[in-house]
Length: 515
Image (tube, rainbow, N blue to C red; front, side, top):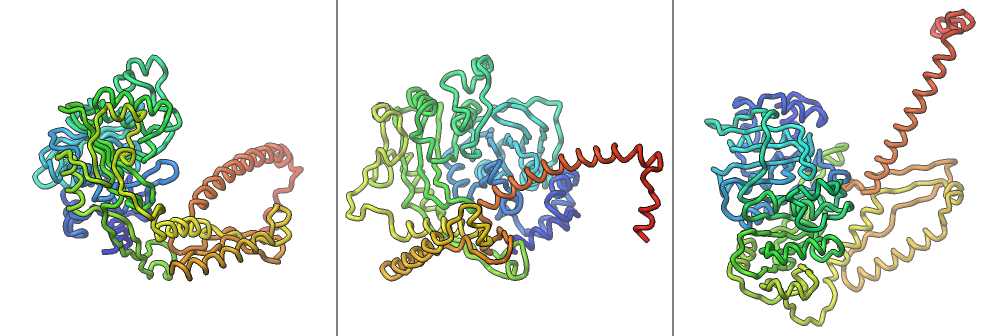
């Protein structure tokens, strides 16, 4: 079943026309057994998390909410790394992909899922209830501890039973915590007095306002009695300032169990490089396992038909290649940590003292031994792939502009033409020498049509990041224009009203104009 077909069936199931309606329709459906039975007729089984894919493709907000949904292989790895537990806390749960993978290993555990995005909550509730999980779901901000709504999912005969429990305060305390939080977002630090009384942040430096990565780490650490396992951006491994001081606190108190650096291009909607940080309050040794899995992966190709747009798009099948772990590769990581062995270019165990001597740098590549190689650069294919990614993003947002206007705005027409010529020559040389295709510039063209300016999509497969920023800026300016428009319409109405009442303005002219 294609995602587009699945979406249409879900819209029909909840009697809605668009995604703006869907969250409320789901929440007001009652999540009845009859509804779940109808859903099971659509999907057949729950082996694939269709809800995650639906929300990720159509609803996820990459710009403001930094929503990147966890690949199945990483959910499985996090589940194994976090160990057995009776109570599991999922911080920033999204639609529940991490929780669902953990539930497969611990079907009788209690799950506490917290999520800020109100529109994701109905999908999360649906995903957990249809699997008949025992869970609490909190719609709230994990860092400020402000909550909007609370739900309990009780186990039923076949499906979970959802009850809203806003009147009950929930203590977020679990055996283990798991999380794939939004990366590199800013946050509102607690004021001095609040920080002193907040058990999450009163033992070390506060994470910087500009970046909440370590705020999520400290939050999950506080919520768990034993292990915390988080997927995070690589920047947390050797950053300076307050984050370095927090790493110092974690190392000096023997709280880090393992650090795993992951391959890039594992997420379906971003190529960002990430890592997994495992914390453990009950460690019985003074060592940390470092794993570099950047060469320990498989390639998977996903086929998917176009989901939006005209027939030329929806009838087209797209191929997307991304990196993943198979079961053998996941087990290799788990075994390396449990055995404590050291394997060149893959894993090593290091004492806290050694990390202290490296200024609390916890990047695996700092400690793992790498064989000397004559090739001191990345593979040509990887470099060209990154180059093409940038060129594709740039070309996807194309500017068509009148030559006179271009000169007025300071655009050097001859320079752009010369750059394009040089880029095409470079691409031909790379093709000749390396047999690799390079995407050439096609992000601007000039026209003699008077006053023509057009910004258009120039790629059927992607929407450039530039459009996301442009549309946001455009919306903000249109909103401002609307405010001014309403202001002047009110002023015009107030000016006309006395003359309309006095007859100075002839209303009969309106009737004549219509006739």
